[in-house]
Image 1 (cartoon, rainbow, N blue to C red):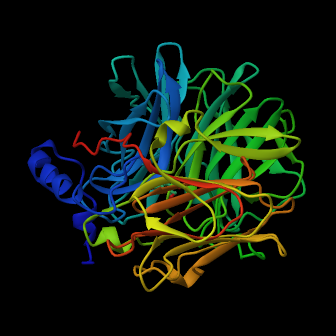
Image 2: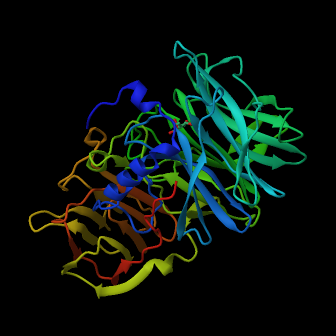
Length: 492
Ligand code: FRU
């Protein structure tokens, strides 16, 4: 892929370029890796989940976006919306860069619905003429007509005692106060959580304190996209730490996305975890997850994430000038002290046509977009997705002796980010009972044991990689062609 200069990368969306961008979109919409039920970039590059929320009867999902190419250029927010978390509609530009506070990027932030508006706090990335960065926490809001307004004055400017890395506000309300949580890097270059607080949303923000996590101190050199979420009577602390070393089968991606379950002690600005932090997803590509700001489900959280990781490159589509999609929405609950992650309630709507029900030794055509339901009574499972005549494709294997579920993308023709390995595995303490696999042209998400684990990975199968093989399984496996729930239309 060609190199982009800084001048080329720091370009804001210009409506005069509409026809040029339409042509770009028309070209990439022909790509064999476009998905049929995932939110994917309209043009250019997609990154973090932003502003995820339920407001005025719809789910709103924004994403970090650079319109002009598959590079991390000047960041905007792009807006999509949904009624059911499965069918997504492109809405056009959400927030674009302005003249000062966010002139070098509308960075990540959250969605907080209240009254007639959806508040959208985010980080403005300002850089001076020497390219020194100044982070500002800013506020925008969307009204019921879908018009987004920006507040001129920042909620706060750079906070003393921390480096230039201060970002990604997640806003919430608790017992009379508004809060937002940001990820910061302290002067010893350690990742930390900072809580800000105010009596009102638009002003009055003060540092409430560094959020201490009882018994834990090492979150790498920076914490990105933190999120504090009440689920029932417990709290989830989600974050994307950078710079952790791999530990056994965990933390093998360049950067990870992790969670604690516990209790919040607001008085002492302390989170009290009920155990160590774990990876939210055990696949190869998952980062910057965010729970929706919503007031409809007190006992569940709804999560989306970037189906990718910063610093990774996705050459097959980058060569075609685009990159990135969002994961499917997940419903999070805490059951017996453990996190459960399930696909959105109506996910069976995605099963359009049954291609067949199989046991051992089946080989058939694999739809580019598919849903696969696997039943297993803790017996061996071995299956190939997007296999070719001479190689297995993406493999999913469960070994009942060791109780390891292993995925492997190293056999595929197109290889990406191999430095971090091509396989991942999870140990299933209670064995394997079932899996639902969502495969969508360039992605595979595997939900294991009704919410126990999820493994999400990008893959880029060629047209020769088109076979589904069930090499081993005693239980019943059903293969469906998936419905199209995302129109790949051009909306600016
Ligand atoms: C995470 C991140 C955020 C930042 C955004 C910029 O991927 O680095 O911390 O706000 O991306 O695009």
